[in-house]
Image (spheres, rainbow, N blue to C red):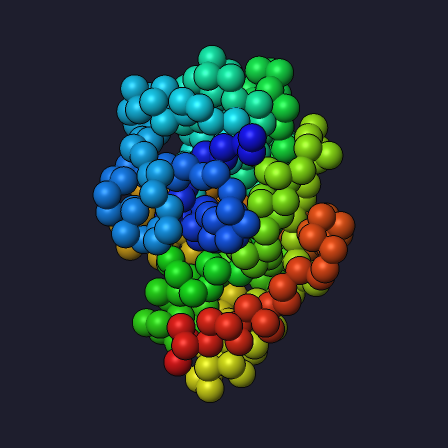
Length: 286
């Protein structure tokens, strides 16, 4: 009898790709969604889509019934991720879940007070076998979300990153690693830092995006003060501005430039390059 895997964040960038990979292998899957009927339309071929809402802990018990392995991720930007995940982790223990693979972030192990690290430690404390996946900044942030909107509306990328480099990773690689560790118990008890195979600054990033799109895209480095003022004018909550500011201080300090070989070791191939990602998504910037 094969394990049944429960995927949270099933319609997100990583979750939807993870489901595609696992479904192609014939894996017994259940997908989580706040609105399961709408989600099922986005996840063709997956019949077991259930309601699971982090704001409604009463949905956890039925969602986890019969589940062996849990892929756990929270919405991006959740500043209280430890509180968000704690109830479902507790229910996973009560429900007999035998493996939790959680998606956190590169570098969380450096700060035990950070919410994502607390979430990892909460999982470890249950005694359930686990694998922590700690990816760097997603390449796909350039074709969705605020940075993509900036490029589309201004023809430029405005960030307080100076000339710092980042080892961006493709979401497809993150999902492929997740699929591998969910289905191979040799990874249990490990934490993997997932990066691309090279670190790029944002000048190089916009050069590549310009080449694949045929449009001239610029990078405009901002001071921290100018970046914060622009976010405030846009109506961004101060809590999110503070998090954004802290993140880019870490970027400018070079902490996001580290390159690891974890993706290559697990998948037996090099990570997707930024050039390949950009070519695959080139229509986004045309």
